[in-house]
Structures are given as structure tokens and as C-alpha cells.
Length: 227
Image (tube, rainbow, N blue to C red; front, side, top):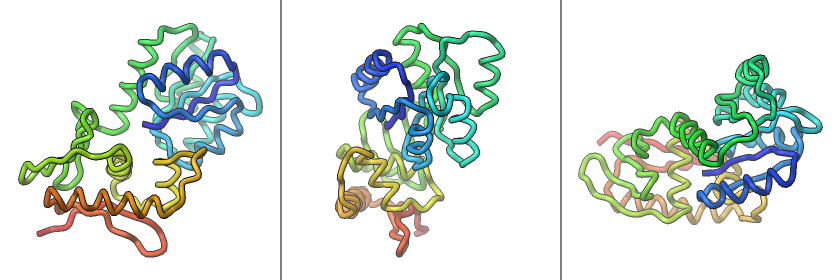
């Protein structure tokens, strides 16, 4: 899971980054609202955590602009303000939840897990599309028709997780490269081709009707073909 953290207080940001990485989340950190919004527009994040008081653009404005641009990732607001009016403004701006500083680490992690579950519409860590299910806890791909299963590598898992979350949409190579390899990684687009090939082989191994289809000149789409 990939999280964007927008927090201008460096000590707080470093502590949050370490906490999230311990929980196996990938974290991109930004210190101002404008930079955060620019990254958010790439639509590669599973979750967005915004501090309210930031230079350039505050968290309320970032959330409002992100929603206006069609970003659907869950947004958690972090702020030292606890007044009801501030909470209302955050929620009205497009945030899904609100956490007032100071907070306990376990509460933050619980809020994150709840929002991610809601966003992926998964029950007990299971994502489904067509005739396949993906266990997000064990990274296991299973055919719902014949029961065959196979364990996925990290990149294969993240490709299918992202594609199931965006079912019905064509994903560009750029979106996939940024999502799977990240902004700070110099991954070539042929990495996408290589891991798409690996992932297709895993789908073929379990005899799934669900396939990854290349859309010429655009990218890839997850489809379930009728027999």
C-alpha cells in the first residue's frame, strides 16, 4: 500500500514515516501543500494523510482540490485543532476522517486500516474481480471457479491489487510505473512490460478467465472473458 504524507513539521513527519514503514506501507513525504497536491494528481496513492497547517496550501485546500480533480483515495486529516467547526470544514473539504494531535500510534494505524478497507471494498482482506480473488494478507491469487491458488511476488501482487481497485478503467504504463515503483525510482517502462508478463503467467497458471489486456497506445485493462 502506498501512502502520501503531507506534514511540514519534520520531526513529526520522520516519526510518522518510520511508523508507517514498520507496518510495511510505502511512504512519500511532502512538506508543503502545493507539492503534495501535484503528487496527488498522479492518482497513484492508496491513502493520503494531510496536516492542516502547511505552507503554500493548507490541508483543507489540498483535499478540496484533490476531490475536484476526481481523486478517490481516502484522506485522513491531521491537525492540532480540535474544534467542531474545524472538523466540519475538513470533512466538507473531502476528508474521510479526522485525527487531532497529539494521538496514539495505534489509533492512527487503526484509522488507516479502516479507511483502506473501506476504499478497496474488501471483506476479510479479500479483493475480487471476475473469477479471481486476491488475498491481501497472504498475497495469494485464487480462482473462484476451480479453487487453484498461487502465491504472488510483491510486484505481481501490487499490480493486481491496483488493477482490481481500478476495475473498469484502463491504466497507463506511466500510472503503473509510478504506482508500483514510485516517484523516486528510475524504473523503465519495460519493467511494467516484464512484470505484466509475469502476472499474466500467474493468471494462466490458475486457469483464470480474468486476463490483463493491453490497450494499444494507452495501457492495460483487467477483463474477465466469458467461456
